[in-house]
Image 1: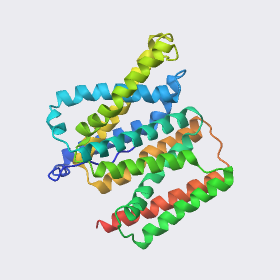
Image 2: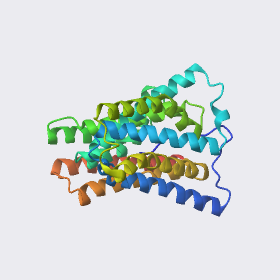
Image 3: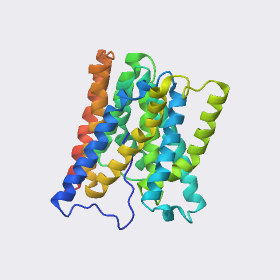
Image 4: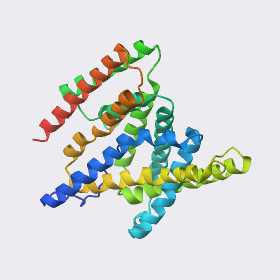
Length: 305
């Protein structure tokens, strides 16, 4: 789950020293590897279902970020925000909740490959949104990449007899989340904390309600299960903070290439470890997505030369 980069006007990448760049690579790769291996974690939360798992993820991430923003002394960044900014933060909170819920459901119901395809497709959705929403003009190669991605959706739909809704939901929700985050004038730590203010209390109330009605799993399944639910917070926050550290030290083009570590590891997990079926239509769809990404990445790197 790769978030967009959020920087202030004076927040340039710290690429002036080899040591800084090395730390940036280590942080960014660490974030992407942790995201890529996350399909191994979420099934461990059973018997909690996807909804309860998302609620714990939101609640414990929120509580953890309260500690982080306090230690970092960044509360001042949340003062005096306009109603428009809070409206954007609210939209981002809803979109990321949809993304997290869909992702957790997919990794606990044998659809890790579909989830990986969703995150492969996120950059292409972002480009399409730039055309539709921001009225940007695309180069011919970018249009070709979007065409290949569209063909992949058609192939996967015909092959399975239904729209690849997991892939589309993850790609579109995260693409829209990225668009929203670009308009929010907050860096990662205060930004994630602000999102937590809107969803965190609701998640906590929901979890308390589950426990009162006896439908929750936080108690009654041992200390190990409770600790795993609490760990959903750090599992979410640590990669985000690593990513933020990497983003400060590396150019965006480098981050754009490194981000494919995440869905590639997810894809390998789904095929090799989880043993998900890969009929011919699925391989063709994956191949078209990879071809689209290769064109997209090569064109982006060439444009920056």
